[in-house]
Length: 357
Image 1 (tube, rainbow, N blue to C red):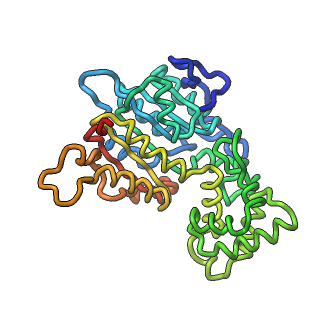
Image 2 (image 1 turned 30 degrees about the horizontal axis):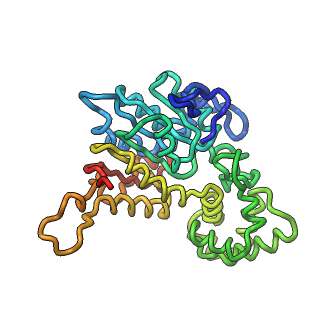
Image 3 (image 1 turned 30 degrees about the vertical axis):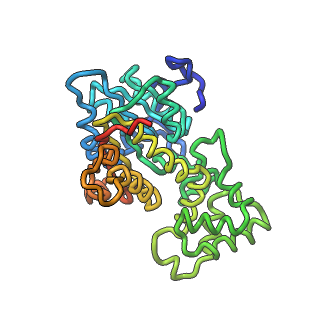
């Protein structure tokens, strides 16, 4: 977890960013002009996320419930959580310093109810330990690339705009998409495109990339899009939208280690829940959703050996699923916010403590 200018020390000396910076509504768009208020970010499946978490965040007695937004972004879900549940305290994580800066001012009116932390979401256990928070009442994940990252052309996430091939959610660390394209062996690139982009034409694309990078290293997204278009057969270009989208997805996942981070983060979030606590996870492609489904389903399963006449407590499920499969956005929401279209929402409630020892 890294601190930033203006950070304040947490109760044990750790570096924590309290809300207070920003420009969400007035932040510049890709072309540099400020966006009108309210047009920059529309939280996906917001009402349903709030409803799933509500029973855990509306206590009648006891200490203030703590809810964690593991993917702060521009703060839309966090703002709604603080508004909807006035007794709750928020801890919000994001690896992108610019997201923290922008969301800080948006959440400033909530004062010390909001604590913003520069961290990747698999660092949740360390963040909670530093803040001396033993367990939480709610956890929200809104996975994938944020609206801000898509809209700011210089970040290189969007294949529809020419930009430097960066794709790092935290531009202060790690390798860029250009470095992946220019340095990975062909076989590794094919594996990435197949595993992370589910790209059937991976070999064709990688062959073209390798030929082109030998002439000149890749630096810009437009050139990559052009190489991909030229490499694909006409039939492949007629279906599935922009032919570059799967390659861009694969590069983004690799650059940010998204699936390996998620594999650690969801079990850690479940472990952080108090009994009665709830988790809601928004995924945007099948790879993410599959991982989330596996973790939640495992937690909701009876682990007793077959044939036991009575199932001991230690084998009972520790989660109760709150959604039947993955819930989808409504047609109306998709019409109002096209980025909601691929969303898949799953939720679960903690119903039992882990066994000691």
